[in-house]
Image 1 (cartoon, rainbow, N blue to C red):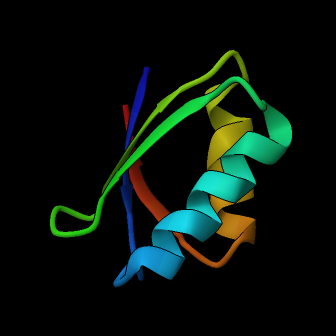
Image 2: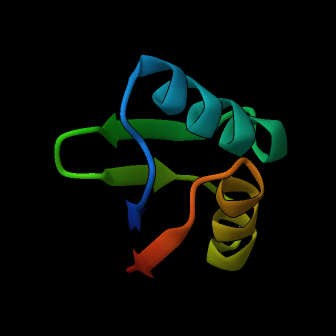
Length: 66
């Protein structure tokens, strides 16, 4: 599981966009967005750098990943 700090998320639409971006590369992924904490927990078989890249391409910079 990856724990990511993601900027610019403010609403449900943002959460849906991030989730859709991750699911586009791994339809079996589990994505949990916490808007208040600006974090996204992702359980995916995709490599971390790929997950980070698709979230950033969707307009939400990943500032920290672990």
